[in-house]
Structures are given as structure tokens and as C-alpha cells.
Image (cartoon, rainbow, N blue to C red; front, side):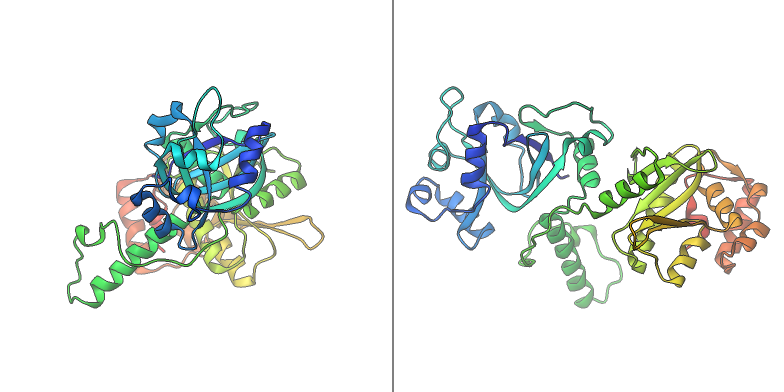
Length: 386
């Protein structure tokens, strides 16, 4: 699990000086003053993580020793100050070394050396206002994030999803697992892969350097849409993920909206899956919607409408247009994902046919099974098949 740390780093003159010295620019850790202060293992780990011999660094004082012991490669740091998340970094190498810290920054006269040192394998200037953090579930308006704060698993995940943080470490883990799977399948006739064959910690595979850490386009698209329709929106932390927007609609109910930065079929498919996953945990829904940066092609529009999902998209003049799904299809999908179980006779086969769902043998079988039990559970949209 990726841990998120909120780190004040821009609020006073000392912090801004440290920012300029070791965040705004990379530091050559092979230089004599710093290299001689590092242990052999620390130097080796830094070179392995940063082969060019340079990296960005930050550090904390002894009062954070216990929590800093939990910091790991791939954890995410929000560098805060002046009412904004000034930058977001991904932890590279973490170690404790007062001599190395003192070579990077002058010790604090009261709190001592910043001896909990970590490098950043990725870093991006962001300028995200605190209001975007306050709007996330589990955070409070007016919180100015004073002092280093280590978030728990739930709030860490909320921040990662809410701000669209995408780490190099997670991509490398996915790549390792795919590489191992390819290796196992291409070198064995077996069709069953034991779990231990994939559950490994290291391989020789490495991905290229990545520069994008934060993806905010979708959040900005939601903000522009909410301003256009002049409605306040909120986000819900469901057990299966964080929604993009949950806002009132014209029917007097609520709309669950998922934004995507592209109109590609892959992005729209992902949005459909997310809406079906989140919807059972969102009360009073009368519509599901996908928000896109431009009008999708007709096939993609028809795909969303077939599953009862409206499509809203940005117009060239900066406004937005909404294409509603057919009412029968909307009724079917809302019945299937409703938090309250619906009787099958309210979502019968004739309505499914009118909605345009493909009547494959598998769907017919599932409808028959559901009818025999007389109840369709809300959290089981799988009845529709793929």
C-alpha cells in the first residue's frame, strides 16, 4: 500500500531555502562532501535508483524517526505551503544519516539535524490549492496541514485517487508481473500458474524514466462542468474507489459522473466499469454519466447509451452538452445497480430487450436464474455480461 505524507516545505524562509537547494534542483551526490558522508550501502542504493548521480532530496528531524522508519520506495510526498500543494514527489531511497543531512542542509538550532533523508525518483511542481484536498472525503475545510503528517491507508488512497497521482513504482510493479507472467506462460505448457510464481519482489526488468506524476485534467474537467451547470458537486469514497462527482440532476435525484481525459474506447470502457462499480454505494441515483473533453464518435456514444449511461462533453466554445441515454436502458441499469434490491419482475426480459442489450444465451440464462430467485442484488451488475 502506498503511503502518503503531507510535508510542509514552503511556509517559512528556512523551508523555502531547503526547497531551492534540494528540490528545485537536483543534487550531485557523488560530490566529495556528500559522497564521503554516505555509507557504502547508502551510496550503492542511491546509484542504483539514480544512475546519473544526481537526485532531489528532503529530510526530517529526529521527532519523526518512528514514522520515517515506515517510509518506502514509491511512497508519495505532498510538499505544502502558502495554501497550496506546491509539489508532489515519489520516494526513491530513504535512510538515516546525520552527516549526509548536514552536508545538504544546516541543522535546525532547536530540533537538530534533518537526519531522516530521502531522495525523490519523481517530482512535479503542482500548485494545487488546499481546497481540492479539503473537498476529498476524510479531510476538513480550513486544515492548513501544519507539521509533517503521515496519512493512514484509507486517506492515502483517497488522496492518490483524488489528485490522480500515478507513480513510477506502481508501473514497474505492473510491468514486473506482466513480464513474469509472459515468462511462465512462454516456457511452460501448464495452464495453471501457482501464486508463488508471480509473488516475487525483484526482477531485472526496469522501465524507462517517467516525468508525469500527477494527472489533473479530469479533475479540472469536472470543475468546469460543475461551474457550467451551476451545481455543487461532491465526491464519495466508496469501498471500491473514489467517485469523480456526485451531483444533483434535473430529475430531482442524483447523478454519478465519471470523467475521462480522452474519448478513446479504452477510456470510455473504463468509465463504464467504474460507474457500475461505484453505483451500488451511491444513494438516490437517477442517472449515470460519463464526462469527456469532446464529443465521442457515434459508436462510442452508442456503446455508453446501450448501458443506460448519459454522455456529457465539452464544446469548442467551452460550454458543455449532454446526450441522455434512452429511458428503457437507463431504467435497466439503475435497477441492476440500485443499493436497494429490485424485484426481477420490475426489470424483466422485455425491458432488457427494449433497452437494446444483446440477448446472448448467457444473458438469457442469467435472467432465468435471477427470475427463479425473484431478487436481483443491487451490487451485481455482472448480470449484463461483458
